[in-house]
Image (cartoon, rainbow, N blue to C red; front, side):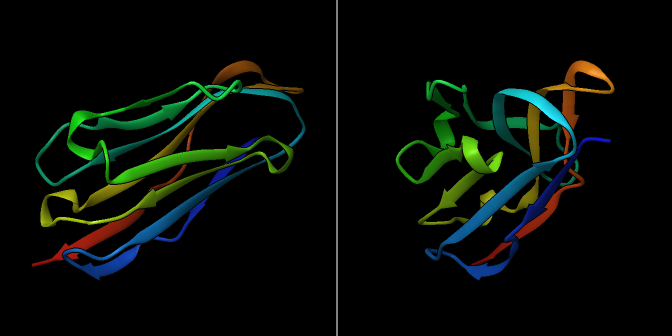
Length: 120
């Protein structure tokens, strides 16, 4: 069974930094695209940043220049370094990955979410 386990969320003051991690576990043939999404209260889930297996990166405009996504393919892990955090970054952050799993074939998987709260 494939799982994505996130860590690193928490409470931080505006201007501070946090680093999120998301590790995939299970019997996996390959992991393709990975990314981070977020959902603030009363809002739809939105893309924050994505990274392909080859390292092509895409950021949402609100986080460009402040957030950095990276991945370690050997560890099946994706990271999100968040700097210069703003109160509007407050949301539940979800990890996403397209995975080819031994038991389930190819599909999209989501983590359970990690709360990030930025105080003003």
